[in-house]
Amino acid sequence: MKKRARIIYNPTSGRELFKRALPDVLIKLEQAGYETSAHATTSAGDATYAAKEALKHDYDVIIAAGGDGTLNEVINGIAEATNRPKLGLIPMGTVNDFGRALLIPNDIMEAVDTIIKGDLVPVDVGKMNNRYFINIAGGGKITEVSYEAPSKLKTMVGPLAYYIKGLEMLPQIKSTDIRIEYDGNVFQGEAMMFLIGLTNSIGGFEKLVPDAEINDGNFTLLILEKVNFAELGHIMTLASRGDHINHPKVHYTKAKTINVSSFEQIQLNVDGEFGGVLPANFVNLKRHIQVFSKLERVKAEHGIETVERERERLHEEQTEE
Image 1 (cartoon, rainbow, N blue to C red):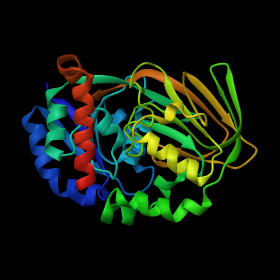
Image 2 (image 1 turned 180 degrees about the vertical axis):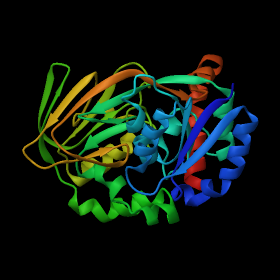
Image 3 (image 1 turned 120 degrees about the horizontal axis):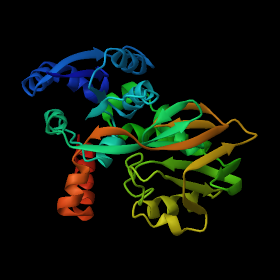
Image 4 (image 1 turned 90 degrees about the horizontal axis):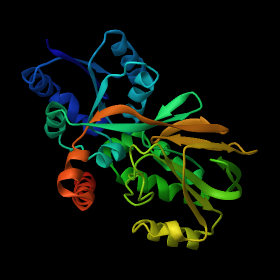
């Protein structure tokens, strides 16, 4: 009996390359024994709707082809189900944080091969109030850069879009008063941002939360206290090496549940997209979804250093495109 796969893809991601490659992708999956169909998203939230529809038709595999935003919508379509399908990913976005963390190739056909080979990795999923995320959540003006960058700009210039928007927003970056409760502990004070990571790959930074594990049941929480622009620049330099976690203005810890509140209206970033405003309650759903990935096999056969080199290679590929 053939396995059934449903591709949910963003036709505008990746300079529209996937849309042109779709016929070849369908043929390759059919030859591998998959009965495959596809759905092109048309608007915000459509990938979530399409994923829920796929659940109704008992697909064995759902393949998200797009950026981190498309992946987030698919996760929100399947995370509440009791019998969740396996998840395939074809990274087509500007940054592709989650795909890189799981060593999923940037090349379309190589990503399809990862699905066909069948290696699976269980991953944690974050629940924020009544929605889900698979890579990162956070708040503060710094975190708004990713969803402030226009889609057209992302399509034209790729990762450069974030730097362009970041420079434009620099004068607006300020601290806010915030309260963060995490596993019985409390931070209260002025902060530039907070980040809650499920993987070590956030916004193109591989070492922002360097020891984050994809399936240990813990969030990695980073809080940056109020700093001036000079201090911020220094901390960002340290972050490129993973040395920022020991800076006195940086709080860095693990937690399974986190509650964040503020008297100010602070916008939330969820997997690179706008996620509403505070307050928010975060819960880690341990090993909640199985994703096609060679990560654990590479780690077992070649060690963590090989994994890190492969992530660096994927990042360099993404930057060069």
